[in-house]
Every structure is written in structure tokens, then in C-alpha cells.
Length: 458
Image 1 (spheres, helix red, strand yellow):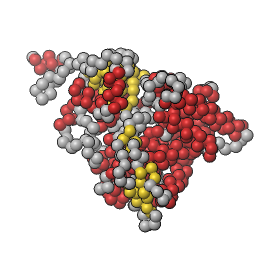
Image 2: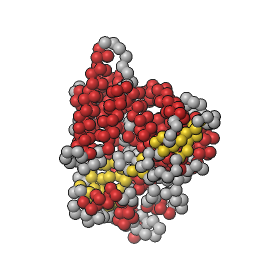
Image 3: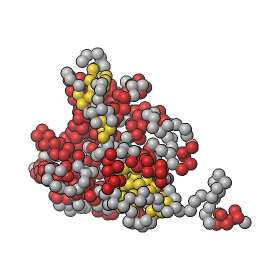
Image 4: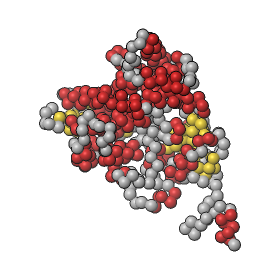
């Protein structure tokens, strides 16, 4: 009789125990969130410590903003499977710097329509068009590294490369226009997750000024493209795809709307890629035992790389790098009704941050005892069988996954194969290899390297 009652109530015995009913949301008890915010920016294990104390779903405040942090496959799956009860959300600094018209700050049909437009620039057909020019940029970087007399900061080169792809290959910018855009974009990017108070000289104030200049330059890009189109001239980069996307979506977007979508496009195709490339090269150089294992696969490949060629070891390496240092440390949703995430009740109107880095280093629920391997250990081989038991979402998840994901994956693949086929890279001693985490992970010391051609010449 008792067993029938348990089944009627939706309970099932597990390990001779009844599972808990929906649990109330644990909280740190932070009132203003000032101390929590200080700890958040100073302590890289801020969320991990609180997860260990309170469980895989907990609430706190950061500078007055209530937040619910979640980690683990169960909680994340519960969140993403209920997309009808969530909307996108960003901190105030990001909202202001991206702009009110940006698809990142829109929801529902407005978001989906603009995403279809901008997404044309990252389609499979677009990537095939971009690949030859990306290969040229990889070869140029390899030659630059090989010819350098002094050590080169690889992080700066990775950032310049990633920006060149999105600005030159995709948007068709050249020379002074591209360089000026890059300088302002770096100022803008550094303040994305800053305190949004524009007092004179602050990073946020400088970023707002840079944003004004960026929008003006992007407006010029649109005007030139429109003039070329009217004159029957081919458009540079992929802007013709953007025009096709507008026609397909039937959106009468204003220029002000379009330039904000282009600003987001620059961010989507640049910051995550630059971070991933820097962290990948840092991982290879700091774990020299991995290189012979990877090199045997890379040396068997063609260059330029054929898109059909299989690279299981490289793919496993990229997965492991992104597991430990995802280019997007987390992403946000706001709930529109009460949700249950991993058995915990989360009220409607809550801002939920998915803590990817912490999720990737910790097994949750019954999976904690499923395997004994150390998730803090760098071990690419764990991904070769395609069943690591982890929920890996390095570019975010659901319908708001990072727009630049496919382009980033292509650039990482081409860069890794192109550089490691042509060069032997060695780390300079006595440099800071710890990671700065905001806006995206990258080695603080710049990743200084020396390069030698693999045929033995400097």
C-alpha cells in the first residue's frame, strides 16, 4: 500500500531514500551586495565556494542586484528546457554599451527576427566564403611570428587576428578604418562588465565615448555598402548576405538599428574567439606532453585544411580548453514565472546566472560519485569517446547561444592547424600566466613566445 501511495504522489525510491520535495532557494543573506561584489571581482573561486556551502542553486546580491547562481547539468537543463518561461537579461553596463536596439537586449519575435538577419553572416555558406581569407591571415601571422627578433605577446596577436577576421573578412574593412575601429573596440570591450557610472575618465565613460565613434564608423560602412550596391558593384566581405537576410526577414530596419546589430556582430565574432585562441595556445605551451600527441594528428592533415578532414584530437583539446576556461564564463536569463531548477524553487522575476566554469569543474547530483577523475586536471583525452558526462556550453546555450560560435570554431581549427604545422613555439620564462577573467579569460602576462620554423630556420 505504501509503495502504491509513493507512486501516486510521484515519488520513487532511490537508494532506499525518498527524494526531497522542491526545496526553498538557499541564500547568502547578502543585503546590499557590496561585499559580495568585491569578493566576486577579487576571488576567482567566488561562486565555487558558495556552491559548496549552499548547493548547486543559490541566491545572493551583487551591488543591489538579486541574482540566482546555478551550476550542473540538471539545473542548466531544467532552465533551458523551459525557454517559454525565461527571457534574455544582461547587466546594466552591457545593456547600455550594446544599445537598446541590439538584438541582445530584445526578446520574443523582435529578437528572433534580428537574430536571423545577423545570423546570415555566420551561416555555413558564409563560413566557406571566409575560409580562404582566414587561411591567409593565419599564414601572415605565422610569418610574423617566425620573423620576430624579440619575444612576441601572443595574446595581442590573437586579438588582432580575431578582429581582422570579423572586420576585414566579414565586414570588408581595410587599413585606417579597421585600425581605428580596433582601437575603439578594445576600449569599449574592456568596460562591458564595469560599474555603469559615467563619471569623467572612468572606463565606462571612455567606453560610451568609444561607442559613439564605433557607431559612426559602422554607419559609414553601411552607407558605403549601400552606395556600392546601388552602383552594381560587389560588396566587400559578407555584407551582401546581410542584405539578403533583411529581405528574407522582411524587416524595415533603420540605419540606427542596423549599426547596433553590427556592433553586436563585432563582439560576437571577436571577444569569444580571441579568448579561446589565447587559452588554447596557453594550454598547449603549458602542457608540453600534449603537443606530441596532438602534433601527430596535425602533421597528417592538409594545409589549407579541408573542411571535411577529421580532427578528433584537436576537437578534444579544444573541448578541454573550453571546459576549464569557457570564453563565456556564464550567461543570464530572467524568469517570467516560478521555475524548479534541480529541485529548488526559483521565483518568477529572478535573474539567473548560469555559472559555466564552475559547472565544468564539478559533477552534480548522483554524478558526483560516478567517476573519480579530477576535473581540475587538464586531460583532453576525456573527450575522445564523446561521453564526458558533463554539460559543456562554452558559448552559452538555448536559443540565445553566441552568434559567433560557428565562426569562432572555424578560426580556432584553422589557427591551431596552421600555426602548429609551421612553427615550434616556446614560452618565455618568468611571465604571469594566470588568467584575467573579465571580459573573457586570457593570460595576464600576454603569453610571450618565441617562434622557430619547423624546418629549423628562425
